[in-house]
Length: 267
Image (cartoon, rainbow, N blue to C red; front, side, top):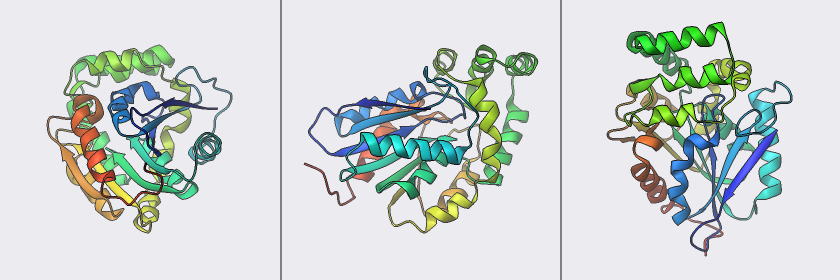
């Protein structure tokens, strides 16, 4: 049900970044631009069932999948090391639950629509900015819901997702899962409570969004971040997939903030 892909650091360290993709239904391949971070820490990419060649055995809730991920991570990582969670969009819900299940030092949420206000801005921006090609791809998806039409639909999001036009190919070539999307997309609508849970946690909390995110309003994201007790940062010349638009800037912000934390296992 869960697949972990580990990338060893270029330096000797006991820092680990657990990286979770969005969607739902996208694979960790959409975040591999964060391989840059191996210059300073070990990386662990998480894939849920249906994505990146992981068999899809049954529908499972976000909570059940989070517990399964915790089990795999506890088996695979030294828990006396310094673990940080990095999650994009829908992946932030998984990371927020894992922050309660694992002894983590910090959490980085990248463009995560926690609140109903943020989710409403997604609906509004999609309706206002959808191009004819996006609408056509959505119609094909609705008519025949499979992995190929799913990828085609997402690849046509254009500026809603990316400044870098090569983002289209990233999604067309992703090992994503339409079944995962269909089974879990509604889970986002009742997860606003996670912000209040996070507000109580005394760990590093950093929220990063693209300054040109055309999918979710910056105002809504900042409101979410402040409610959860996050430091709120923005990246210039980046839309919703800020790790693809500006990978170096995002990686540097993550490293700079981790450098402010007192670590246990750093060598």
